[in-house]
Image (cartoon, rainbow, N blue to C red; front, side, top):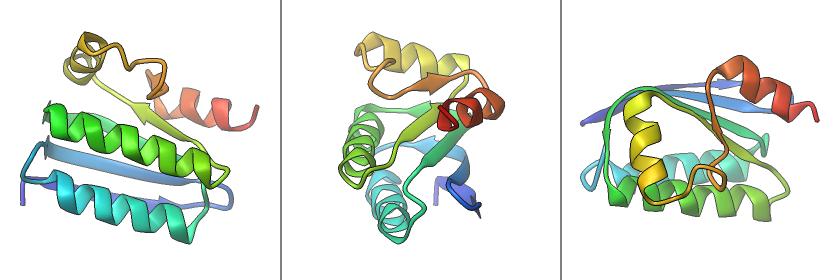
Amino acid sequence: MSLRGTREVRENYQIFRLTGLLDAFSEPAFRKVIGNCIDEGPKNLILVLAQIDFIDSSGLGALVQLVKKAQTGGGSLQVVTNPRVTQTVKLVRLEKFLSLQPSVEVALENLKQ
């Protein structure tokens, strides 16, 4: 598979550290796995995409769906990104909606608010 990752569950949040490609091939499994983890809880998620080499429109679509799912469940989803992913997200003007963060530490601070 083109996308790999780890999941770390804490008291009030989950962190996913992903590497590889978030594209049309990996998107269905990515959306299903993360969606199931939102259902299981905790409802606050941090997706670390700093090691993602490529994201396409299907990957962006999955992120939008997952943000909506987290918010509907009373949680939040923040994305820690790298310059390549940030550039792609900004092209479609989703940087605010996807809560792009420069680091896990900043994302954790935002959870505490």
